[in-house]
Image (cartoon, rainbow, N blue to C red; front, side):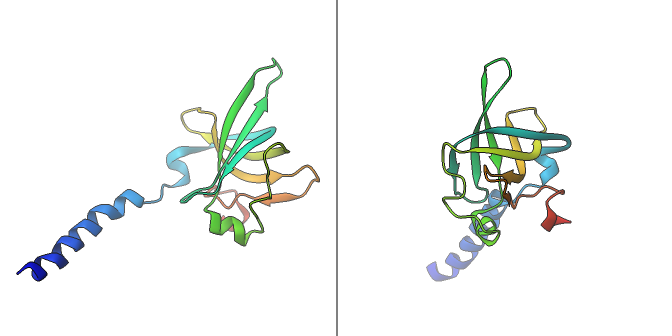
Length: 134
């Protein structure tokens, strides 16, 4: 009897857990009508699933510093695009083009990341403007 209950219980647990890991659409969190171009200093990068994140300090003309979070694609996608863990070390200056969060928070979906030498990395995110999503 115990063996016969195990399979249905596992099936129910998997069915309930599946939506928790569901992936969000770009338009659910970011606004295609709010493009941003940010120049700042990398403070850290989180190589985590389902999205990697760059943390960027952006100095404003009034002297304040804004702490932005830039959503990237999953780590595996970044690696396929040529990223390494050393691509954006803390302390380097970068330019990030992307789209700001719908709620106006200091959070954006990254598109292109321009490095100090002028080379570019693509963020591998869900932006409709990403070359691989067109």
